[in-house]
Length: 258
Image (cartoon, rainbow, N blue to C red; front, side, top):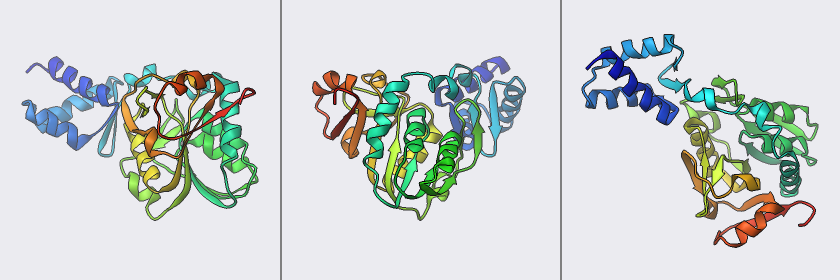
């Protein structure tokens, strides 16, 4: 097989997943006739061409990353909706909660508005960490480390479980890239969604914060279904749409027409 063809096969696989463990990629390539030593040489060349990022035991697509919207751009969109949702989310907090906060500009708004004493916030988002650190009502904040994604300003790692092992969360607050009509919730980056899935398992209550622009669309990585969480908090513009759906969860609407 020609080197160019091999490299295209590797890129297609990595770009499709955005992030893949090296051992899984090597198994896949071995099955289609590309041996490990050849694959590793091709991977080195792809890294030198700035198309992938090689880290310990994992590979991240840099081609896909070119199309990712930077967090600073996301923060400028739907500002009113995000604030309405954040206000409602704060109302669900209880004294000395231990909470996991996933990345997202809506979550950042929520953390900024926290007005009750929170024992601990755990997050892998640097902006969420900063908002928690500045909020006098947050007693402690733990930032999960790993490889830093500059555009989204989050950390990710292969060793997901070890970071939150032994922690039980009162609540998990998270956002998403999209939610389809069946109530399936999607994220766009596998390592982040894997960490979120672990947090959801360890949480007594799980709360989705989603604005109306993210409804009735599909995503890459399925996180869970709305039937598996306690509350969906959204802006009032979602009501007409959601009323037509048979979602088995509690819907909370923010905004002046609530």
